Amino acid sequence: MERLIPRLRVSSVHDIDLDKLAEQGIRGIITDLDNTLVGAKVPEATPELAAWLKEVDRRGFKVVIVSNNDHTRVSRFAVPLDLPFIHAARKPAQRAFRQALSLMGLKPDQTAVIGDQMLTDVLGGNRLGLFTILVQPIAIQDEGWGTRINRRIERYATARLKRRGLWQEEEKR
Image (cartoon, rainbow, N blue to C red; front, side, top):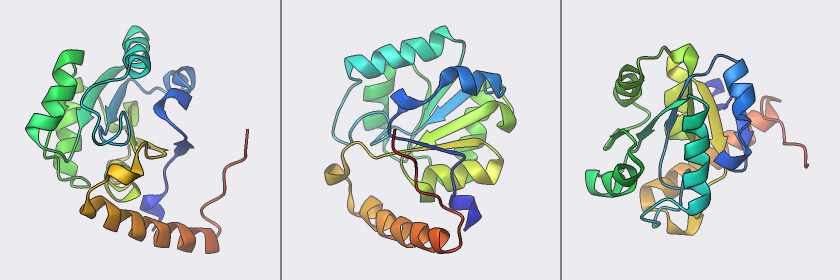
């Protein structure tokens, strides 16, 4: 159960303190696509997200998109941004995460993974020792049936972690 606990929880990628990540030795970011960067049905980056990605690049972070979605969906999003990507990743399997680390030339302790799902992004990242960041899903109403099942399991897991004192509610800002 502890492998489902992210190291950091934020509302969106825009709330991630990039300075703090750099101070912790993080040099690369593996990020999910759907409901992490944009809604599951949004084909391209919003202007705000494009600006955030430029800032991430300006600060010297390497970025790879790792998505369970198909090639068409992921390439249509990533290619205009000139971002490397891995599609059909089968997260939480480790293969795609290892592939992303190899693409960036980084070690797990130098890499963060950002995603909206505990059962795919957080579990997969924690299994490899990555710095895991859980974001709130952007458009939960647009999710497929598989993700909806995962969300039910996540609610159960979160309730169980809370009962064990391992999941703290976030302080309101």
